[in-house]
Image (cartoon, rainbow, N blue to C red; front, top):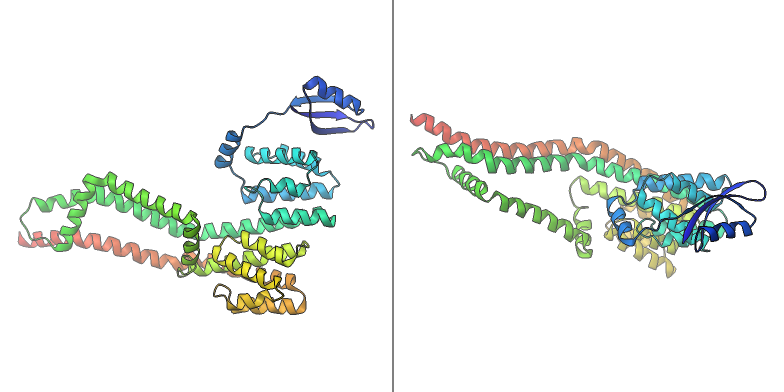
Length: 402
């Protein structure tokens, strides 16, 4: 069994920790043998694997929570607090139940003798390879606080970048979703009632009105089938995009979408340059750093190019030559990287490049709603115009025949 304890050492200092023992009496005896005065002993509740998976699905760990975790950890380590006590302090005030379980498991591994980086690597669902490698580099260089501080700042920047993307795409997604729902209701409920008047009168009806009437009749009877088909189609697309082949296709398609594609391109370049700069500053070899960045850039298209650059560097070449041959990197990127390679200041150049593309991303996200608004209004206006024209023209014809 595992027990959490609070005790006083020979100097009167209160310490907290955890230990394994057969029962609480054995735990007290073990503490007394070490010269500690036990103050409090509690059995640590074990979390089942099923409960852990459920909490992962329900809560997960957001980038914001990771950023706060690294920031607090760096502050405590800078204050000369041990890694075990630091993790205990951060874990105790973490509101996310799943994240608290992960922190407690890392604590147990560290107390069993594992380095912090290896304890992190056992939880890939929370900590990416970039974080594990940075912590490992900090352990080897003896500057763990600096590495964790790098991680905190890097996670914050990635979080802000993702927030910009979500904010920029929220407006068009909301408008299109609302249009789809309203259109479904109109064709299912409103349209059949409006067109029922035409069926009772012996008048000529245009072909486009007849087509709408048939669609309305079908929707009023088989609305459930159409609803299920729409849900199944959306679900099928989401499922396919999550597969390996689907993700590759989607990563290429979304960069070819007008206006939005440029935003994704700038986001990936900014993420690449920021993360690679952080890893190189942390002392990670460039080939290993490129492989890690390829995994965390979150685009299969860019990952393939970055991994080719890693192979090129491994064989004695320059990664700028690979970027120059790729359509996904603008010429200015390969030129700036080449300048950094020639001057031996690749990390500094990457930081400047990250700042530039972050600013470009800000500019696009600020203007995205302005650029998309007329397109969405035109699209919705055409739909409403066709619907109104198809309904009103027969009414005017009937009024003229009376």
